[in-house]
Image 1 (cartoon, one colour):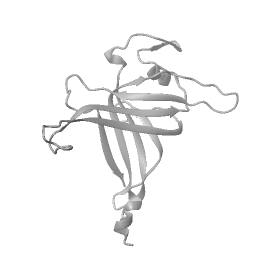
Image 2 (cartoon, rainbow, N blue to C red; image 1 turned 135 degrees about the vertical axis):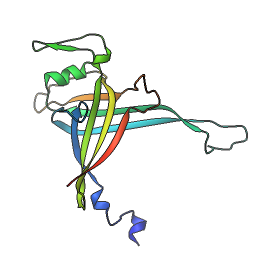
Image 3 (cartoon, rainbow, N blue to C red; image 1 turned 180 degrees about the vertical axis):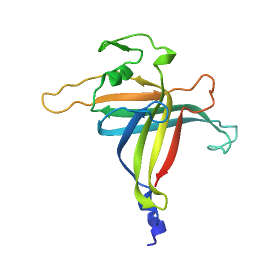
Image 4 (cartoon, helix red, strand yellow; image 1 turned 90 degrees about the horizontal axis):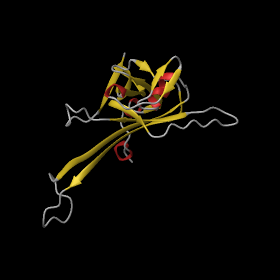
Amino acid sequence: MSTKQRGIGTNTYERILMGPGAVYTGADQASLLGATMGGNVMEITRTFRDIRPDGAQGPVKGFRSIEEVDAVLTVRLLEVTEQALVYALAGSSLSSNVITGGEIANSTYLAAVSIIAEMTGATTEGRGSIAIELSNVLVEGPMTINLPENGETAIELKFRAHYDVAALTTEPWKISFTHVA
């Protein structure tokens, strides 16, 4: 059996994502969120509208459009900081080491949240990575802190991207490949 039938190419070893990745907040990955445990999950869900003209017996090329885009990064945060808890409770604020709730204002949204994962292999350009960035981000869902009798606690945060009102046709995510020499 040839390698083409197995899906393995001569550069396959250079294109494998490794590890949970590191999560950053801010433009240009300005601030590391903290240590995670149990891995991280990035989901970009694009829901399509299937327009079926009379006489079509199935999906028709050109008759599909994007109906909805939802981009979510789920992080299991091991390292708990005041700032991470402020992110976890959208609309909250921090003053004198005390977090209190509040309304969600435009300033509550994080400009960007990114996850960067390393890729295997040494290429002519060197080791590489992939960065997935979400824009206009809020953490949604309940913040649950489970304090077991034994062991560590990881707080799950679901960062959800939002469209910018000034660019409603630009999906609020991007994927970048980098090569480090």
